[in-house]
Image 1 (cartoon, rainbow, N blue to C red):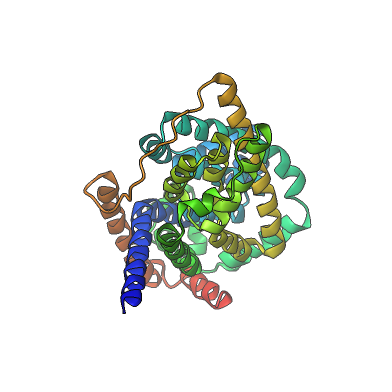
Image 2 (spheres, rainbow, N blue to C red; image 1 turned 90 degrees about the horizontal axis):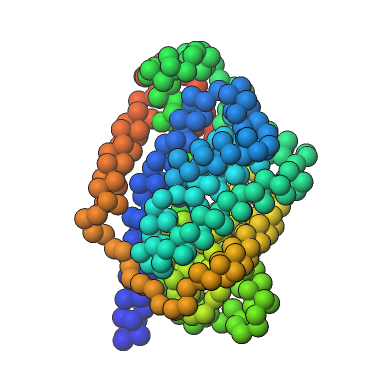
Length: 388
């Protein structure tokens, strides 16, 4: 009886922790998926091809800036990157956008400063730039050819751009200012948003639930056992390689992985290993399932290999830079506490964006009437059929 009661308590605590993680990322989720819908509804293919149609330095810089401005959690960033790609952006540029929107963002830096110290926030930003440069250089060699062509056909077919008819399709050919002012345009944007959310709802539920159970049930000592210590350079290499592996099996995404990063730091992982672990929120297992659904299994595996490599190398280089500068923290302590639900900026933003979501949902439900029964509403239905 006591054992059963203990398990019930653990289950309750795990679900609570999962909810707390969801709460901390709720407003970026709504913002990211909302922006994804808007990109699909309003961004023209010609504009995307002109601005992000390759992965040369100018396009990479633009993709990084757009990503920093979008400030999304990892799930929403993946949806946004897919939307850019489906609208004509280069695949590597789309991935650069995704990396920037989860790593070069203000809220992540704030959480790192609060929980771990300014050095980790600086390391995340500097390492993020290094990682984006590595991705842009190596991605052009590794992410190309027929795999990318097939992936574009796949996401374009999902979005239904080739099969639009009626007023909304006509609205899509209007100038941007008129499209943004049209009810049909916003009906399409809301429908695309809901389609992305429904496509990924299982992965979202799995991700947050498993993250909660891992936080409660897996002792920090188990994570620490994966990292060697006391072997100088080879310790740094091993820690930077294993850091992303822990992220994959821990399921924790976005800002939610910072408390685990703090626990790993307390347990002895190297500075570069912490940085590579934080980067790796984009290769957690649920997100790998998302990539597989978006782009196909072969490209998802190739993305995993490349992302893991650039995250590892970027973490190792960042650790080396900070060690050479003598600014790697020496104290092994950091704040470890669940954020919970309190009256802070996150709660206020969540309330606002939940209201935005309600408006989007109402628009989606009335899309047929607002757009004259055209395009996107039918596309949402077809997308659902294709993925169930």
